[in-house]
Image (tube, rainbow, N blue to C red):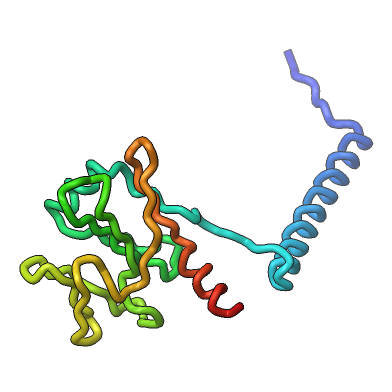
Length: 165
């Protein structure tokens, strides 16, 4: 038995084409308007999380005891490469998170953990830093009631803005 050919009525095709064109035009308008507002500073685009949550303090403190301070490169392509350090025996206290390099240093210049000397050495100079990361930008660290650690990644931006005021 032959199957008959069906086609959409011309009015339906015109409505679908018009809706598609209007939808594309609306998306282009929204994107260009958002970019324009962001360039003028009227809105702030935030890509990525403001808080980094690496996990539970019990597990993290055990990892640091075995492997040393944990480096976390900025996976968004930015420059917020950090090191997470735990000092002491109590997983609930003794946490620091700090920049992996001095302020304004190029990204290829970083600190390295020297386990025997319990300090960090700088790859682009002869500076050293204590195990706490003192002398490097410190990120605020918070522990919630479940023992999960959170690091405020936007603290550096807020510090720069506060200096400019």
